[in-house]
Image (cartoon, rainbow, N blue to C red):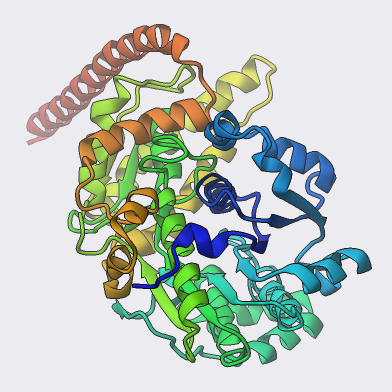
Length: 495
């Protein structure tokens, strides 16, 4: 166990973070400022997005509810955040000369957290954002005079062609630089035609580009201490900054959200498929500890840590659905399309039949009604997007992986008991039922931004929709029975 503590290590440190405005990035910044109060400066790279300048985005960033607890403890803590306008897609990250000089002179820790988690990105954009962007950060880090540790945030699914993923580096299918060069000069039509064969056996460009990125990072081994953190599916917080906090609906949160709105009615998923997730606060705590240990011990080789709850407290998609159904009646959404009643199907044909009757048919009926009323149609487009998203998830909903996580589980034993209470990484003693309640509640409160005062009215709507749902189901099955009776009667008359 190191003689220097975590907070002592981070005291006086200048830290550079890419992807700070994202889900994990917000929690990382907040946790560092709150639990390592003597940190000197946190530089965050922020780009212009959707017409908003970096300054405007920083202002919005600081108003996020993720900082409520920190602001109550130390209102001046956020003054340590230093905006660095830039973009990972631009040459030299789009840095000004002044900002670059300051980063090279001051920074001791770099967190490369910027990435696009969309599974449907074209190969050119996926490689430019996830691989080339990382290369630019690595080149910047290589010139930093005080650099102590470089942390690359990857994913356990960057090697999802393997059934067992260990905490070690794996070679990529292609040389990262060759692919970077290729997407730079090749035309869209040729690149699009090559994409399926190029990324095989990966089901999408996300896993493929993240694998390339790890291989690229490995080329810097020996130049400075490097750690690779591989979180699995990152889900809402267990405790901090508040239970159930989230600000996006990626992965399973998107499924829960769509089902809660009454839009998603069916999903293809094996009964035995486990949902390998990690709470965002546990992932960030592990990354902070991993940084600390790498900076103190300065290992010769790259340190890899799978931030996965595999074998700790397993939960299947089907069990997750049961928890969701239980707590949605307690925290229903105020605006829903129909009574939320999503079910998991073990067979794809079963899912497709249900999808036709519960997704497609209602969507076309709703759009037909809107068209007749002279209103803008939208439901078919939503269902098309939902169908595409479910097809992307099928690869993950019907498979199980073994993510070796011995080093991750050992982190709590490499720090003091007091530090483990602050930088907790163990989910084994968590109340799963309470966590799922906060998960459902968190989607309502933090993502949908619905005030708790609206819950009573939402419950009334929820109950009314339930009765209507039952009546419609009874009518539908009665009609089916009558139709079968009519067919049998006609056949018997012919015979």
